[in-house]
Length: 192
Image (cartoon, rainbow, N blue to C red; front, side, top):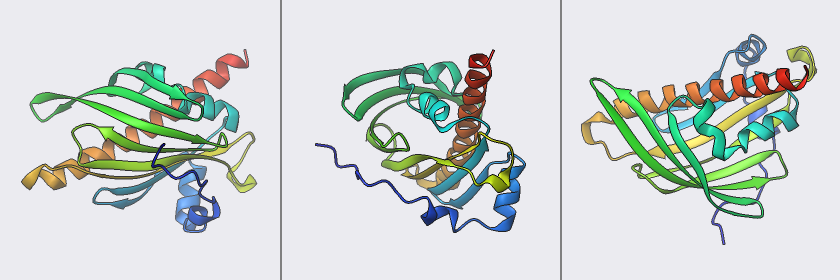
């Protein structure tokens, strides 16, 4: 049995924390990033339906085709709303190329939230959730949804901890932007 929470986090819990500047950034399609030091909250707006966003977020086997540093992604196990995914990530850091393999457990809840945790990999821990919520009408044209991620992660990198945090945050931003790009690409091609 999974140790992930089966509770869907209420949207109000994090939407209420957004400032006027955050809402303005979302309206301009910027990524809002909160936190730091291994604990992050990210959010962006996209002009796709919640169903279209969910289809991309749960297309685990295709991540390598649209996520910038993922070179391989495959479903290892799937049972009901629980999916184990293996990903190989490759990125250039300073003068070298680093490759890492992670195994994550993903629990899909109400076609609105995916709780995840690291099972194996080169981090000490990583866990969090993805959310898809309807955006308020004040953000603009419909359909529009908010894609958000809450994540905590830590790595044993000794004196390079600040470098890890900077790279991890940049990777989170690149990933959420790539997800939005793929969501909007698929939505546009389905409307042709």
